[in-house]
Length: 416
Image (cartoon, rainbow, N blue to C red; front, side, top):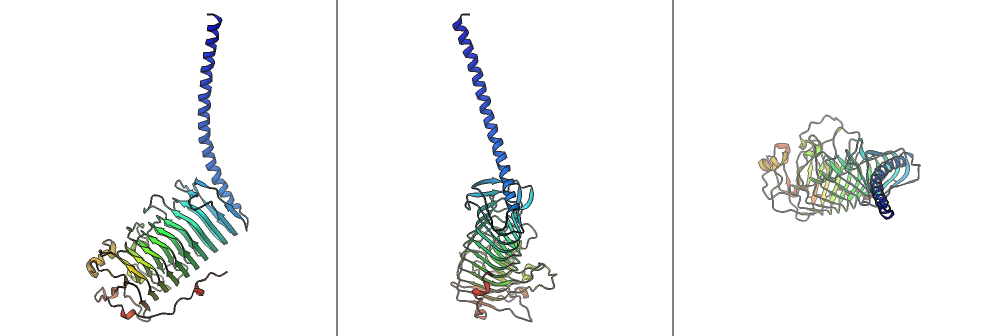
């Protein structure tokens, strides 16, 4: 072999070695990037948890833009004047699809003046965002959702302040909750405005709570649109003084997908607004459109057929005013599902002429309810006489042509 051939041979082996090294280096880069991404996600979770735990009063927790896979809850406890801020409702996304620790996505407890804004919480094992014992809880431009849509195994509540005072929920969204998308329970001085709730069992629910304004919201494609409930066996026994106005409550005809045993499992498919066993509720200037079973229902707890064991609980609605609302519905039959479906088929027999406003007619003999219904566009009504096994159903609303003292905004306003 001459010198030229020897040099060509050496060059050939050098080229092979170089190609092999380059391929190995490329594989190392690929695996390195994967590992780096995994470490980055883990580091982000630790960083977020550290921010929540170590936050000092009067500080801001900044969350970055991106979609982050988290497997444990973020918990803020015992803080004052904290802002938790993402980069935007659809820009900072916290996804808990693989959650192994905790039930909630974000939990905030025992705190004062907390603002949560500009982020999305997705696919939690339990409730998306729960706050408890917080005075001054503000949700602004927050989304809570289960991305697979309606499913009985989704968490119960999307945005969920309970036992809180001075609550503002503004410009928020909720989708897919197996109980209520936006829920305020056992709380005082509440504003829910400019929100959208869709594909939940209950879109917006105010439960055993005092002094609430619910307005300028869109509530659609839920089983029930807006629920104002007082229920037994809770720490806070009695709610009331709730104003529901200027909302667009339409096409809430989704099948009820609540897990078995949940009280909202009894809400009929096709319910616009339901007032159950609470007092001093004003429903006015709403668009209540194409909710196929009932536009507005005013009912006692007895309609649920659940036993009452709480001696301090008052099961009747009273001081309810429904006025200046716009009602429309297609000429179609009401739900055929559940207990209410059976009632509509076998007892009420409304056919396609379903009334917009239904009162169950179950009254407290010692203190008859004050139910005032007036000046609604396209108004239709039925007292279904549930107390007497539906024997004397009446479509005459003239007995309810009355006017109650209106709830004053000053009664609702937040306490600063």
